[in-house]
Length: 238
Image (cartoon, rainbow, N blue to C red):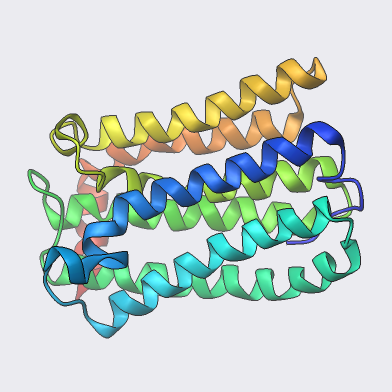
């Protein structure tokens, strides 16, 4: 996670990106509190070593993202750039661990109530694909700060659906993918509207990135119902 010196440095961004980072962290904590962060208090079932690793890797990504925002706001840009090397490596670790965890869950027959493991597998694997593409472009555009910061924010927002789906509210639990995808998209649209209103233009990185994330949601649901996905997902878990 690298960027040009003024990427997060203007007065408005000093508030916007920390608030966005804190909001994402709060949603993730709320969603996974019962099953991961506070599981000892709720008495939920024990987790495998792979799931613990997955939780650790994802949590550290949020920590790194928040730290990177803070470093640029504090004008410690050189350290931010050096930390970007770790961020790049950690994004790759996330992709590997997240993909393996998703496939292993499907192999064990685990999926949310009302869904089947193999069709549902398209959702977490899609998250990893979308996240990876956005991070890759964010890294490629690291010298173009205005694009970089928006793509890195979108990459982090793109993986919110898993946490939202686990928030203990009935309308989320019973709403399924349309609800937790819709709430994820709402976070993105709010950021898009604020950014556009503040700068009086829709930034291309935000526009294209948002279309990519939001457009992937119905495409995944359609793909899950195809014979191709049935065969491909069955092959993955074998």
